Amino acid sequence: MLDATTTAPQIKGLYIDGRWVPGAGQFDDLNPNDGSVWARVPNAGISETKQAIEAAHRAFPDWANRPFQERAHLILKIADVWEARAADYVAAAQYEGGGWYGKGMFEAGHVAETFRAAAGLCYSSIGEVLPSEHRKVSTAIRVSMGVVGVISPWNVPGILTSRGFAFAMAFGNTIVLKPSEETPYAGGLFFAEILEEAGIPPGVFNVITASRERTPEVGDELIDNPLVKGISFTGSTPVGRRIAAKCGAHLKKCCIELGGKDSLIVLEDADMDRATSSASFGAFMHQGQICMSVEKVLVQEQLYPEFLRQFVARVSKLKTGDTADKSNVIGPLINDRQVARVQAQLDDAIAKGAKVALGGGISGRFVEPTILTHVTPDMDIWRDETFGPVAVVTPFKTDAEAIAMSNDTEYGLSSGIITANEERALAMAQHLETGMCHVNCSCINDEPHAPFGGTKASGVGRHGGRWAMETFSETRWITLDRGGRPYPPVF
Ligand code: NAD
Image (tube, helix red, strand yellow):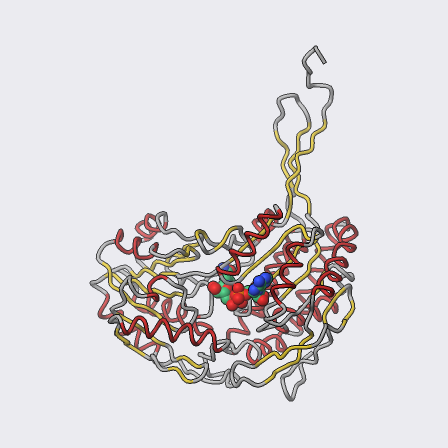
């Protein structure tokens, strides 16, 4: 619950087995706007992680075997409680996450929809009837797995945490959530308050928060513990690779959603207003700290000069500053490490000949919305994820060249194409190596029931709707033989 005068939360503890319990000490949860301590949060260790996993394991049989409508009704209740507390979420996203007020509002609405989509999934088909060589009743049935460990990031803590567990839980799995140490409340303990109020049975949903230093041991326990049957991870590619490798060693199912280096391709017949607004929203929403952020804007050369002029004019109107002020659309980066990464990419690009068309200034954790031109493939910013408010604008001649430029990165999350010619866009979309592609829209798109995920170094597995059910269930082949199958007579 947030204190109305200070906007700081009253932290109740870790949430394990339906109870609030202390951690082994506490850690500081900072407001990135000014570096002040926004909250003190319990620091879980291996012991608390084990307790949470065991509670989830105990809760699993009852939860999985409840009538599906009962699970659906409880999950719909979560959506209602969430909506009643939406203002608290928005404040947490502003003060703990450093996000613009409008971004928090958008997330709050999306999260409620995520729970409703997850509740709806309870009513969908859970299998298929197959033809059988021997006239068996041959069925492929999806069953829940058990305990699912969810590790979520800080940048969009409401949406990315809720989508990480809502579908898995709706399908009968039980959850241990470890949110990011940067947003332990908005992405973790706030959800525990909501699910407790909604009446989710003890043990079905557990939250452990851990400092940056404790995270590796807590994360290892969450993956290595044999009671955990699946992992949902959203975060950076280096950490995701490590987690996928560990899951592989245990032969555990995992859904791994990672970073991106997305391109928005603007063709010469594009509507200019749509093109510049798609680029501006895509590149600068949440200071570019979205996995699907538009990091490269590839513009057909005939349109390039006019696009650049109008894009710079549009972006120069975005206000930067403390997100306590609702009119500041560009807030701080989440931490100093992130600022250093953006600074290093800008320095490298400028030293190698890139030109700053707008911005470029950095003050503390605030990075001005920045537009770079004359970027070449030998610069780090061409291929590596920036995760800051920087857009690279580059001209191209042919569609094939735009596709090659877009694909010239290890990542493959999302892409966008702005054009009046849908047929041409669909032909291009087939060659873009991304898990998602949006025509006449920005790369940033997410709907709770749609298949969300990347290719290449952007991850494996899909979240959203029935694809999440496939991710967080096992398929079993179960048959009824009615005397039809002959055996070799020798037996
Ligand atoms: P991160 O990888 O640093 O952290 C993500 C989560 O992993 C956090 O909860 C963190 O505490 C945890 N973690 C870190 N080390 C761990 C370890 N050794 N074992 C277990 N858990 C560990 O990423 P971040 O900085 O929180 O998020 C930003 C990154 O996430 C960006 O690269 C962004 O593109 C990516 N991202 C991807 C998606 C997507 O859906 N594809 C969505 C949002 C963010």
